[in-house]
Length: 236
Image (spheres, helix red, strand yellow):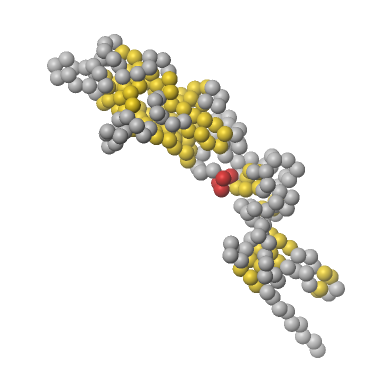
C-alpha cells in the first residue's frame, strides 16, 4: 500500500503567462511547465510553449506544431508571419489592415500636366499581402468660368508607375446666371505583384484643362467640410 503526494505550483504572471511548477514563467511563453521531476526514474525536462505572436527568440519560436525557419529572415508562410530581426511576429500585429490619408487644406489643382496635388499627403505602407485594394475619392467645384475637366491619378512612387485614375467634367459655365458646377470623382483598383515586407509610397496627381478661362479644380475641405474632400486609401 502506498500513496503519491503531488504538489503543483500554479502561477499567472502579470502579462498573462501561465506557469505550472514555477513562480517565474518564461516571459517569452504563454504556458511554462516546469516538469523537472522524477517520474519512474525518468527526469522530465522543463518545457515552455510560446505563442505565434509572442516575443520568443527566432531559435525557439513555434506556432502550434509548426517550427519556422530560423536560419534566414524568410517566412515559410508569407503574409502570415514576419521576422523583425529578433523574433517572429504575426503581420497583423505589425501593420494595420487599412491605411488612409486625406487633404486637410483648401487647394486648387491648376497644372496643365500631371503634378502632385498640392498639400495632399503621400501614403506609405508596408505590404503584408501581395495585393492591395487602392481607393481614391474626391469632390470639389470649378473655380472659374470655362468648359473644363480635371484628371486625377494614383502613382506608385516606389516603382514609378501609374496605378490608374479618373477624368471628370468640372465646369459648365452658364453665361446667363454665371454658375459653375460641382464635381466628384472616384477610382478603385486591385494592385497585385507587391513584395511582402516591402514599403511602398503612393501619391495622388492631378491636371486640368479647358477651352475658356482658368480651368482650376478647387477642393476646399476646410471651408466646405460637408461636401468637399480628397482621400486615398489602401486596404490589405
